[in-house]
Image (cartoon, rainbow, N blue to C red):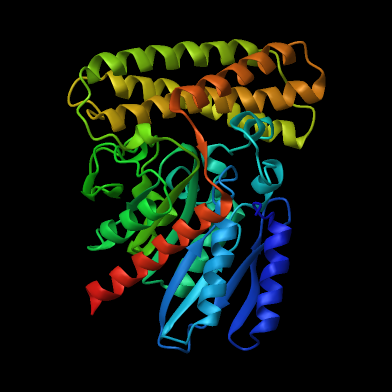
Length: 405
């Protein structure tokens, strides 16, 4: 099984709509900046009782599993008796980004980064509302917020993925009972649960791998306020479901770390030094085409983010993590940021035949090898990622129904 491209998703969705005429519908809700269609696949709903669920896939270009999961969930919903709930799937929230991040089935962390792309924050559909005024939002974000306005979903499920680590869920409000179902699925499928996810540092956790967004205060490693993102648009209950492409047991070790402050100082120092190496290689590199310009915007965004992250790790007060799992998650995050910037810069200079290309080639290759070795990375089959993500989405819906019964 491979990660489907936006074109593959549209073809599969059309076939499903043809198989279930009247029950399954495919419609276009907008266009990307590059003129690519934004497709929504709906199963039931609107006339079946008015309880709508919105599933968003492909909001981050470098996390391609969501499209496959959306199709899996749509097939399950189409084949099940109508239960008064409509399921709506935004098949790819950022088709332009998906076109630039080309990883149908990466064989290694290095293979994944050879074609890496993750847009800058203002160009990400879910994050843009937290960074830009309403009149400057990209069309993908406008389409997504418009869809939420139209459907008024009782639940939104945002399908995400991580390159290396474990699985976790971020919630805009607690869904009692989800932790048990999520944990059982992860155990059955041999996927580690990320118990100290850096994205949710300082958030309350009703169970391993489940994190509830705070109403105020710390937002973990996010440089933007997630409470202003599309996850919280109209006060929607949202579950953000993360699954890993490569698994590591280091991220689910609940033992206390012997020296979290010392470890954080080391991680912050390494992060700053790695970013400086990339920044030095970035100097003098220009964009020769629109793809290169998008890649360089993302490089610069990432390099600007890194000092904020490092400062947060060494600030006075409670450290952002004290367990072995939390420090491992921060270690992975600290490796991930400069590696991504280097990989995107590598793509630009490689295409241009720039003299920095060989040095960046060695840097990205070495960092990928070190990352994999440090975390003893084990590949998670795409089908396994999809199964766990689908189970978790369905569990979130069941828990919401139980809580509202």
